Image (cartoon, rainbow, N blue to C red; front, side, top):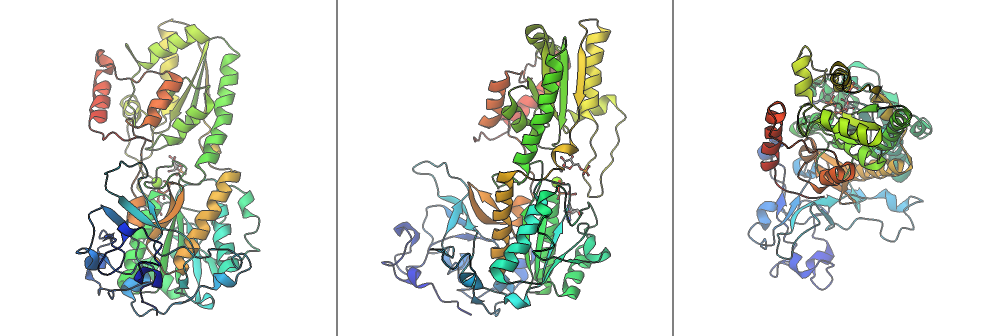
Length: 532
Ligand SMILES: Nc1ncnc2c1ncn2[C@@H]1O[C@H](COP(=O)(O)OP(=O)(O)OP(=O)(O)O)[C@@H](O)[C@H]1O
Ligand SMILES: O=P(O)(O)OC[C@H]1O[C@](O)(CO)[C@@H](O)[C@@H]1O
Ligand SMILES: [Mg+2]
């Protein structure tokens, strides 16, 4: 095992690091390293040696006294040697693979990190950084000893099959791994279904299909049973593709694996159609879904502009986050109003939706509204029989805001005999996620899969891979299991309002809309101003 300090770090002249990275005394990198203590078991484990890995020479505790006050933090991911300090390493076989043999810089430099915030001011602290993803000089598995498995959990998303395919091909063609198992039907598949052998031949065409080749499910996460099964089957690399819930489950698996001291690398690949995963730039399949949503919006627009007083409503996915609706609206320019879960709205009175619809109908003869499925749930609940139904994973089941909105608009205009309207309601929710990924998502999926494979082979564990400011990084799982929502105070929402010229629903004069407006204003006042 090579725990020595890389030569370029022990010699300041040869170091590629800027001088501020280096301590004048030791010439070691002065990175304060933040480990994820949310993985509680870390504390109880034996401390690794001072210089524990090939990549970063010293650990947080030891560098704290040397750390320069430039606010640089490495938000590090765990490594197998943290709890298996005597694990041997091997030269990375990738340098002999046909693809990489001629690459100029085959390996990611150990000190390469990715900044979480790239817009900074001259004097601002350097901030949080993540390890850059990619192949490392040393690996902690012999190819012939690897027994990998792949599991997909949660809802569908374009590109899952591409990720599966590229994990299999990446393991096989880059690292010569031949033993790869598919876990079928989500987490519960670990202990209730047979596995299937995955080879490049088996997965060759699957990226052309929507859905997941391995099938999926919600619920059924039993950490003990899953890790028992991993142990019984001799699996030592686990690739887990799924959303925020899945990543929380992956964190539990990692913790248990560490507790049992198993040489098992746990790698998460973030998947969600809602784009609600924190830290990463964007989730795969999101662009494909937004593109597919254009077809529904376009259909609504064609319908409503061909009739008198046409009102088109398109319901799109987005349980707690309105990213699909927001981006589909911005992309389309046929949408007059976009309603998302994060932005409260109201129907009646001044500044309300009815008033806006009437104005647009008078002005243009038609209107298109995009509504995210999670929008306005509290109002729907007031008029429908509220239930507290949850899916198998514990996610609240949503009431149908599309039908509710359609009915309320119809009632308003017909009952009050204001004007005869022509309502067209389109609900393409599942259609936008059940398709194969587009070209750019396919490439993105390939990068995610290959980065995950490099990370696991290099012995990293308890990590999720994803792009942060366009560079792929290894991110502690606990970060990405938080739900990201649209921030009304970010410029992107302002851009949408400027594009549609829809009401912001912040007029608090009316009694009917008053509570909702007040909530919205309170919400905005309590938000930190950020920008995109
Ligand atoms: N806190 C948790 N601990 C352990 N497992 C969890 C946790 N939350 C969710 N899971 C498991 O993760 C799997 C997927 O969760 P969920 O159905 O919420 O989908 P998701 O991964 O969030 O994807 P999406 O929301 O995009 O459909 C389920 O099998 C569920 O049991
Ligand atoms: O497949 P199901 O269980 O109907 O889930 C639908 C949900 O999954 C998502 O696509 C992803 O969380 C949501 O947008 C949607 O509410
Ligand atoms: Mg989720």
